[in-house]
Amino acid sequence: MSPRLKTKSCPVSVVTGGAGFLGSHLVDSLLLKGHRVIALDNLVTGTVENVAQNAGNPRFRFIQQDVTEFLFLEGPVHYVWHFASPASPVDYLELPIQTLKVGSLGTHKALGLAKHKGARFLLASTSEVYGDPLVHPQPETYWGNVNPVGPRGCYDEAKRFAEALVVAYHQQHDMETRIVRIFNTYGPRMRMNDGRIVPNFICQALRNRPLTVYGDGQQTRSFCYCSDLIEGVYRLMMSPITDPVNVGNPMEMKVLDFANEIIEVTRSQSRIMFKPLPQDDPRQRRPDITRARKQLRWQPVVSLRAGLEMTADDFRARLPSGDRDAR
Figure 1 (cartoon, helix red, strand yellow):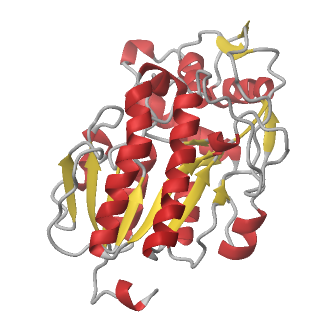
Figure 2 (tube, one colour):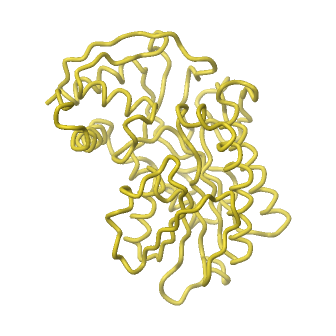
Figure 3 (cartoon, rainbow, N blue to C red):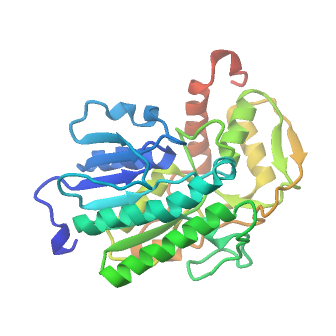
């Protein structure tokens, strides 16, 4: 830790998007590690229920605010974790302008806060910066294959711009910055109508409805459990690494095989229904985590079966009683 980041006892962390799926898990982890945490969220895709367990904790504060607006906070801030952004195709296809604004204006405001406070800054970027990759698996040195005017362009380009802005602040203002490229992550607190593959499949399976597989199901994905992801992010923030780092699970599997795994985990009677593949849907997605393994000494430890069982239990508990068909 650099001299300007030394703290007397309790480091202060600001988490934008702190009421979202990953942001709320980060908040919980930081509180357990002894941080004071200020969570900012405009609740467009997040929910206060994700951080309700921290109500009454004197080291936790929640502020409902849009990160694209000016951020003013009294007192010291040592770390800024910028997680604010719609993160699923359902969200950023419905909110393309907001997605672009949080990636550009929101990142600018969050960087401004970190610069003013002398804080270390971490950007939660995404594997989507690689687009529909022509290199497999994807190392951090790959520049990507992105369609800027396609249906995913608003999210892909927002994150690519955010990365460029973070690098510019690092170079021009000598700021301590980190960039994590997050691959498919799942776990409790994902929204049921999130639109991503894990909540889609689990909700369909718990309701004994057909699992919708797009295309022939031979496209591949890799799935990282949320606690593994948060540990990797934390290690990156506390490391001296300024280059982007992939954090995700390199275990690759076909979407069709994943659907069958969900049916088995939930003991569902669902069948599989095939639908046309959406435009620009990546055929392959798997991280090369060599950099994380060597420089952070990090790799995922939660097995797919264990992670899916914990996630399914969470979804089952949140489903209305009349909707829980699978046991």
